[in-house]
Amino acid sequence: MRLLWDFDGTLFDTYPLYVRLLDQVLEGRINQDELYQHMKVSFSHAFQHFQITNKEFEKMRELEEQVGMKGFQPFPFVHQVLAQSDVNVIVTHKERDIVEKVLEYHSMSSLFDEVIGKEDGYPRKPDTAAYSYLHNKYFLDGVVGDRELDLIPGKKLGLVTVMFQGRSDVADGMIDSYRDFPYSLFK
Image (tube, rainbow, N blue to C red; front, top):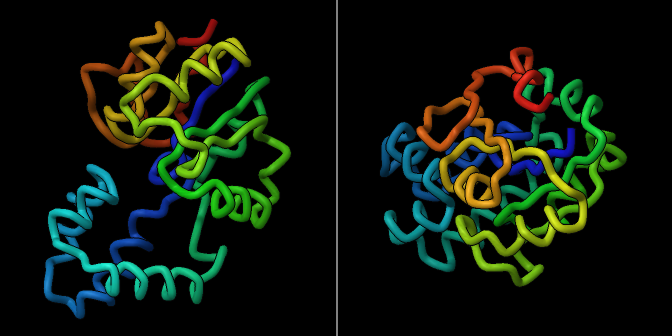
């Protein structure tokens, strides 16, 4: 298998951390369930929806740095899926250096062949540019993501799509745990 992965909410259970940090910055003014729903769409969507100021964003970054790498936890059983794949690459809207630090902290760097992040200049998902670049380089088989936004570019390129902890008509397979990864879709 040769897989392209999303990072937040797919490889790492980061939404609870970011909801907690944003709640702290906003001093509890917004219900955490509502924060989660909007952050699940995208971080930029949530920041626009809740009109997060630059000052509030910077405060959230400071809190994130205080939490450190231990705040980023990989989903159970994801390591086993990664280890069975011949190629693993990441496309994320997050800064690449943060992703690489998290992977290093969790001793997962060696499981990934390439990371494309915010600063690499590709248009945001669901644009296919970053996916096309990686597909042409690694001959990918599939995409794993937690949002339709992650799967649409893969589907456009003819790749198998797996939705993690969500439901989507774009997905060829849907799982709630990596213990149930649909290996059979890639044979």
